[in-house]
Length: 327
Image 1 (cartoon, rainbow, N blue to C red):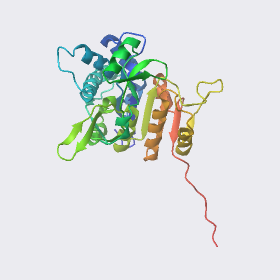
Image 2 (cartoon, rainbow, N blue to C red; image 1 turned 90 degrees about the vertical axis):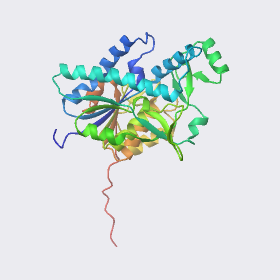
Image 3 (tube, rainbow, N blue to C red; image 1 turned 180 degrees about the horizontal axis):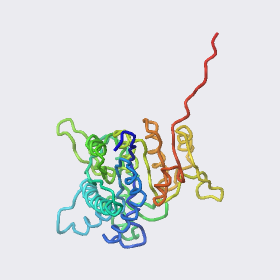
Image 4 (tube, rainbow, N blue to C red; image 1 turned 30 degrees about the vertical axis):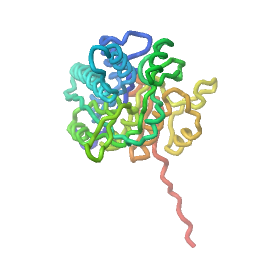
């Protein structure tokens, strides 16, 4: 590869692989995994250096259900360990599907899954105010049982009853240097799956796990920053960021500077607009940290959006070329 080859970190939601309204069978999830890679394979063939970060909301929610179903037979696993487990098997699905797709395209690239830890602050306020929805919609009866055992269950933005767990802000992806080495060598790396396994640094014991989930878009932004990526590509189920979303006056935003993006976030307009706020926060934070650009786009339009055709692009503010008046 030439020195001009660029690096992209691609974030894919767990909901893209396990969609509501259908069975969460492995067959269906493999099928959706193959579909989700259609936006990434062209980038790989074109020579982009690639790291892929995936979500795991539905999958870790299902893992919690299995935990509860088997509670009387086997010892339940803590949430942090379930995050690690889902990162492994979702990574396997992406790794196998990507390898097969590249072979069909005649592209010789190696694909590897790297389990990563996301360091968080032990005193993050998120632990006292869980905000992250995980898992599928629950019935009133199941929700009542979970509440009686101390779990938080509330209606999400679509009115579905779901578990809510702590989602601390990631500070560091512990394995980012290894990801950088592999990506630089031309390997496609599936990293920080599920946002990474939440850990904190204990003064005596070193790294220790925590029961929480990390937002995969925020983790992707930190990973992109730390490996020196040129682009952060966030793929979702909405084709772009919109002004006045949900109204007849809704308008797709083609491009935002970091100042414009920050103003939009501070306006509160995106509050309650599904999951777009954390995506725009992550995209903006990457550019503010020195990244060239971020793009938020629909899954099926990702490759085109990288070329400027669709999605919403977040770019640095234009440099100030003003000339000071001399006395």
